[in-house]
Image (spheres, one colour):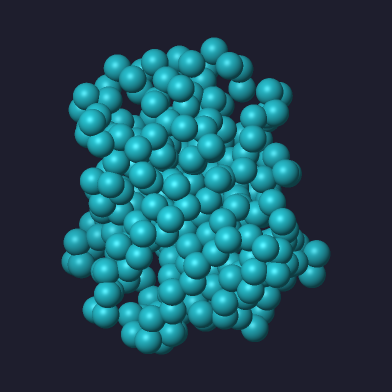
Length: 303
């Protein structure tokens, strides 16, 4: 991946910022891929009004820009959930972006590849490649896009939270070409009802099976159990989950939070009594996104 490609797509993006949002490809040539003519992307709107995307082959970012005089020079990459089987693209992607741009944040919805043996040589690293590439692309073009390169965060929901946590703990291990040694570390993370662990007793088995296969070895399980990979350089995190979540155990958030505290990494955890799983930005008890905004202000990601 050459620098001229980064600058080319940056130019194309800047030409279209006036439209409010711009979709652009992550790669010139998608890495770790193989061909399967029967595998094609599908986007379906359910009866609940949520647009879900499956079988992604060409990953993209959709960039939402804030009003110019409100720009906080902060960027957040949003990773929708869906058990690594599909992307809840509207509810946990574009709708979240609309809230963030009102705060002056550049919101970037990541349409990442879902792990698949049909189109990937190694499906366990496919989503992480796309997350690292998004971080790389934004950081390289931060000046042109009016973004502070020290204020690039990643946000994930459910399995998207698994991806965001993996990006936050595996940044020293580049799974994409990175000849210029661009930092792949997010500056902060936001994890909503995340699948943090791959340990059998607390993971979401559907997400684990999709990402690692049905019989992964213990080394692979431990590597993608992000609560075990937290270190002193892991970025600060804001976590939110409902105690009555029956799909993803709250232990995922709790163990990650405890690991952050153990390593003296700033963190905030909100565990609500009710809310279930997949509540997006809406909870019956509270507006948790307002708690997030306060946390971002406290940590100087927002003025």
